Length: 198
Image: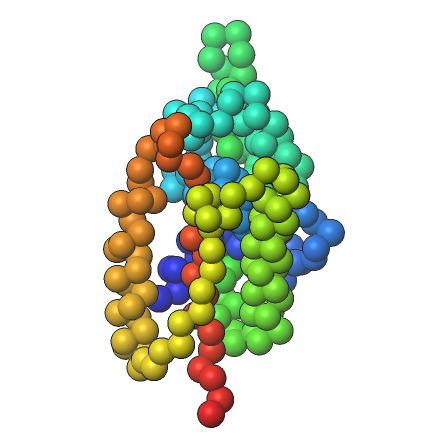
């Protein structure tokens, strides 16, 4: 079930980088464009701007290069190769961190403090996206299609894992859809709370 958390590509805890609000990493949790870029880079392991442009065609080229430059300066990605293509050096990018390994290490160490910090940054990222949406001014809550809901339920560990698998299977075809003028990029945030004390 861990994969449902890892797919959000939240930054690692301790070791090579500290989680601090001053790093501006909150924006990478729920900004749909940046999540998409990070997902593509993670999937390919190494990727060029040209390859990214094909994978995320809804991002204008100038915006894409600006995002890449900022992601490098924020320490999210790094240039691992430079290939000579005609008269231009083509940069090859890769993620700085192995997010899967970092999060698994945190889970195995049962780091409650680290886990809470991670969740706080995840939550702040969602609040940041809603704040941007509200600040836009020209919003239509009903037709824009955002919302949130809490549903209490009882489940064993195996039943919870089964639920997570079904949710992943349901989301997958939508995650793989190509963008269109009508099909907007969104985030689906999934949270399983710890068992509630009774």
